[in-house]
Image (cartoon, rainbow, N blue to C red; front, side, top):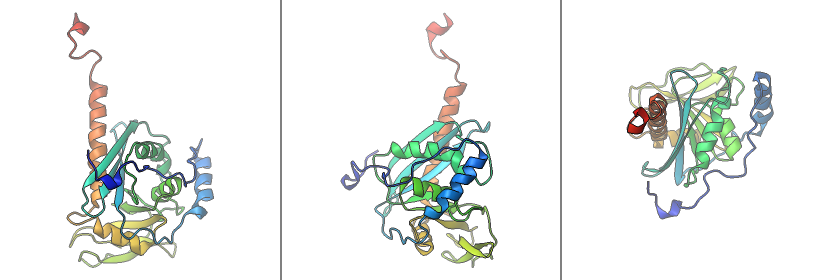
Length: 255
């Protein structure tokens, strides 16, 4: 895949982030979230005109024992894909609500390291501040990479809200425990809203503006749509390889 000369030879992930720590168990995972949460920058304001933006998504096999983590980098002006990478492997942690980042972060970080185009902003298919401990995937990923990050969820993880007006761009606060943790944003007229929250180094106003910029035609951002397609293709290819008997198609194997 080709990209514009201005994007070439840029590192995919900065080295200014906090090192990722894999937890040994649930108790340690909870401690890590509590320790890292105060380090998140929830004010930003973050880039208002990023050159590149990355979408991150993860698809799981039906068995739950295999995943594909995908990152697509888009030109933020045209929304054309300029780079992409995928990592197929095993979930790194048990299925525990609120601790999904520990299942997915190692594979997402591996995919990010394979990029040749540095994203200026990360858009996660998930949540940031809108999390039971205010430290969702977008917060964790932003802190580890050092990059600005936002979460865009299809469904809420926490909170209460009133439905926004039916027009594109309408929003209402997402509140949890009396605290505003995100916004419920209508990206298409009369279509279900999405749930936007700050991850790291972004303001909530800027996060909403960026999501609207990345949703010119559909409910979900183009970042999420392209990453979703890529991880599903990669997972399907891995499943086909796993289902192919050794030596299939090789005449010598049946001789």
